[in-house]
Image (cartoon, rainbow, N blue to C red; front, side):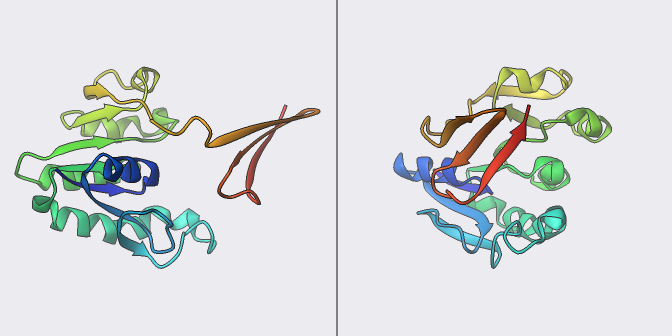
Length: 172
């Protein structure tokens, strides 16, 4: 089975591990051990262009959907940007999406595409959008040891093991 995976390294690597043919559409400096179709030379976050992500994703998405006939499944993880392109694909293509943690801000957009088949990464993700065409829940599948919890007074640190110098910090 051939997959196009957009911006989701762990999913792409796991599919390859299970014997699937995968093309990962992501930044050119991605360290994923899969076939890579670079949407940009470097991670937009690392070069200070993260705020422009949706605009930089458009050419990449165009490339994915221009070649949609080559894939059995397209896994898109760039929010609702794929929705208009998905409607233009006229062959049977399994499609799934993961989106914003705050969909209430985008309800009119999601409701405009409520006919599209979508897959959630948790049952809780479905709650704010019951009118969507949910076809399945596929849990995130991230490795349990990906994040390391470090407790300090009044601080919780979650850091990715492969990026030890970068951490997300939230104060309580």
